[in-house]
Length: 278
Image (cartoon, rainbow, N blue to C red; front, side, top):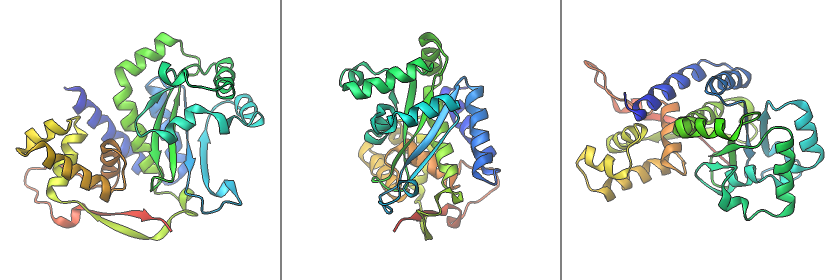
């Protein structure tokens, strides 16, 4: 079995368990179990919505974590959130960022470096920030994978073997969480129906299997620029900044279909809704 197929199978199985959850708490527990089973000690999740409620920060942010109370208390008392580069990197970039990136670490100011030093004292030396977006580019967020208590070698081994899968699962978790009332204060109840064309679905399906643009084009017998055009159109419809996010969102919405003998799909299968924002 190829690595790409293994990722697709694991992602679909994870999505199935998340889809059975009836609330945020259940979804959070399923996620924790999945990531702990893959060697990730801690996961945090959160982000900022576009500033609809400037007078009340609690209404424009979501944050969930299971770090221990001592760490959370110290982090809050020191006002580290405003200076935490692990969070800033998720907000700034569209691809996953290692907390040990030498290039990024070399640009830290003293206040940012203090946040990382304090984290290290609590056993948080390594980690990965996976950017996610809450509906639009002005609403940044992230899934933050923390290597609490792991040695550098242990963490490097996990990332070397599983980074692509961990990123795919992080995006899947975010899409599953987005359907819950956790987001009710920020979501317009009038949904926008998404309709993907056959080519857009085919391109996303091959992307879900790990194919790059050139490989997608070869599979479909089209030019590279044509495949990229279809992927860009799908990203736009799904309000995704990256193809990986588009795949996760399409899977969560039931917009991808890989073919079943004796079954003829209809166009309405590939209609779903995503929230629109005021």
